[in-house]
Length: 248
Image (cartoon, rainbow, N blue to C red; front, top):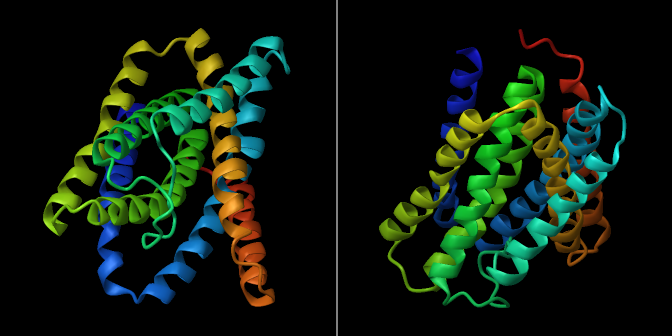
């Protein structure tokens, strides 16, 4: 019962992050861009940390680094690549940028929905494996969702949606995480967990390395680079700290 409560509380919090798009109106363009890049750096650090400090150690704890683990990690990388490649899911972390096909509202929502479904699935399976792993995974997902949701909200606005509709559609897409969590709880088995945990690690590594880090290279001034490195280390440090905190 504790696992179920933790899981649903986590996916509800993750889903409510969709409202962070309101920051789009509260911050000036330059301030928003700088804030997003700091959050992107923090997110990349937490995803790398979550993958290498929590998910992979959990995956290899009992049986070691087996072929199944390796293939599951690679599957995570490939699946997230395919989502980004063929469903046009690409995180535009600058809501004002115009380099992507912003008019494809449906594609954006479908891609984001698939991503959120996988997030919910991963969170549920992580909690089943252990409460600390679930909490670490949830924090990594939340830190990634903040810049992503602001970017998605900007995409929907650019596509011509009204503010209220953009927030509603973003929320509905985010709520798909709950469906993923339910599926994860229902179909969880030892074999399923042994596949999904390293799969999640592969997904985290792909998102951090292929999606987030390249965004940081677009701003290469000394001041910006310092804050990017600081936030990256801060994200990793947060995951290190979670290794030593008791969670009942």
